[in-house]
Image (tube, rainbow, N blue to C red; front, side, top):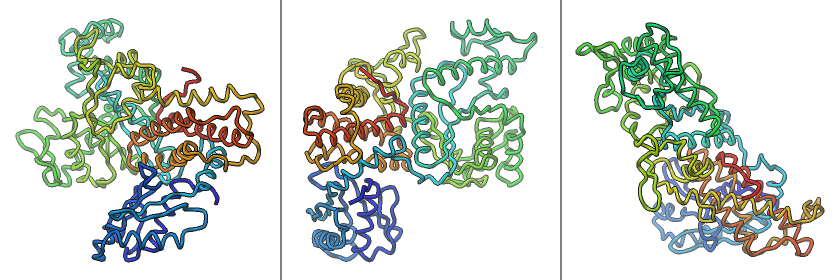
Length: 549
């Protein structure tokens, strides 16, 4: 049986179900689900417990409702029919299980053969073209230039960076973008200008006062110009921190002020007026948001003549879709923007942007916890813990991994003590230590033993630990696709932890050195394949692969 990746294994199982189930009207695969007749979802999923197969399906329950039959009877029929038409060497076992599941076990030869693919493809293993070259813009961090980056900025920063890596790996053209809030007309910039000119204290701190002394403001500078100059200096500092310490490289740093300079903001307002999507009331201009699903109409320009954030945001997103022709835009925002997303979506819909073209990922709050108690105060400012302080405390790898472990729509307790702990209790240490153990295996072998024979025989890999590890390695392409399609790096993090656990079990129970020659070669191949998969997965997440710990 030739090597078949887990993703192709799932597709093959779905194809077999399609051939024998009947009455579906054209099943198709979508994010790991079989959609029948355009309306009936039938899951084919990897089993958590191998005793329930490597894959299972609930198709019998769906068919039972359509055919008015007992699910177990249908499951038994499906298992028998699929076994009859299954290609030789693909399935080792198939059975119906109460109350109506069908469980599938993949043949050992299919698993063993996948090692050849991993060893051949190396850094390309798991890469695909499912994105079809579609252009995706991911905008994240985009912090106000009035202070240092916060812990919340870190959660969004690492998410956006990892997501772009995963999408690019799977065939999309993802571009990372930082939106600089530097519009001279904004109240924030003017207030920053007042602070720079000594006329206000809204953002004044000891650190900011030192920075103001170092910048040279033109004599008679306006509050707008002073604020813009100071914002640029603060932004430079944030950029250095992002690039050098967070290791995040943005493709584009987009200036909000450029939207005013180019006339994009003015043209957007004119377009809304022309299409009767904006009206004047009490000296202000309002967008007819209630026509497009929002709860009420929204202000575009205040009666003072100052635009709200809403108008330049509309202009910015039109630039993404109409000018730069992105197929999809993903905005990663903090929890305080939850109510803003529907408003922006309504505005873009009115301006002709397809609803499925824009996706908002809203981050829930992060709570820093140490020894069971919440950490609230910054050491220096007495207000909040900055992202830099967090990185200095726990390290970049731990910060990245811990943030990426959690789905962004869940509240998160960041355990500072656990993140600093150098033991297998620490999730990132646990994964990295698996990688280091592989390097240790290779270091202990003699030079000749580190080279695989030209035609390595994988049949000796037949223990429970061998199979469990191979099974996890073979799932990597499927997992990366799932993480990309669901826009969820946390899927990949969970997979890494499970794969590391499978390797640690393998390491504790099986040997390479001292084994019979064929077994040693096969196990060496398994260790090298594990190293490749761990390297690829950690690389996509932006987590380092240490040589020693």
